[in-house]
Length: 98
Image (cartoon, rainbow, N blue to C red; front, side):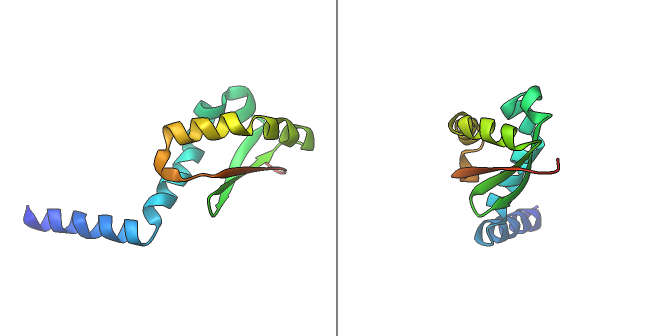
């Protein structure tokens, strides 16, 4: 059992020190995007990638990207409440392929 505990400690250290733990948490946002923003928005906008601490979201159209930019504070608040360790500081909305 000591071996398993040591392996867990080593993996936790590697994930933390390599920044992978934060990335795993950040990309968890992609999995529950629909829960965070609701079904209507989730059909028209999808998270595409992380750029540092900025979540990049592709919207169905420029109009949707603009509408979502007005909702940014609310979406960021929901992300921070659900994933405080994600350290998402901004969201960039772009018109693009979903």
